[in-house]
Image 1: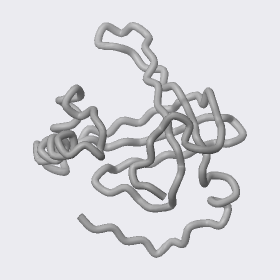
Image 2: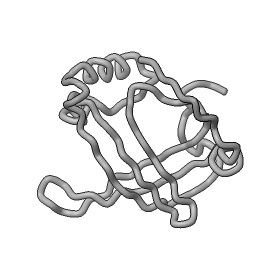
Image 3: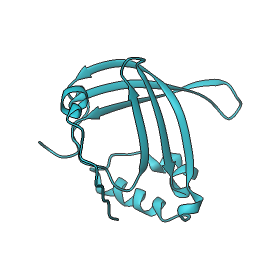
Image 4: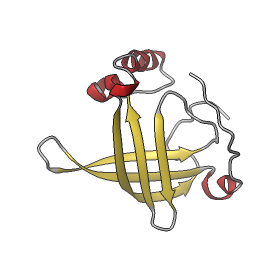
Length: 133
């Protein structure tokens, strides 16, 4: 997989985003239509891009809201239990790579949602960095 951009990272990233840690909830519905929450945690520790996933995320600082679009492979969307794990664990990573081979680009499931930010702080919190600094 390759990645290319001609856009320089805006200098406000260091002021507003670097080392920012957000905990937020998406309000969704389960298979029966009952309200449910999906809780996520995100730590902006680096300007490096993560390849393999297609995610667009907008953090509205003044409204404390997240708007996101995530594109899942058919394998990941149809096998959510197998899609969970830790990227640093070789067994989990290989399982994810296998799931990514199910379907084609046109079979991706695109999920667009809004979330309410519940907590904002600096630093890793309880998260373990993917790579040591």
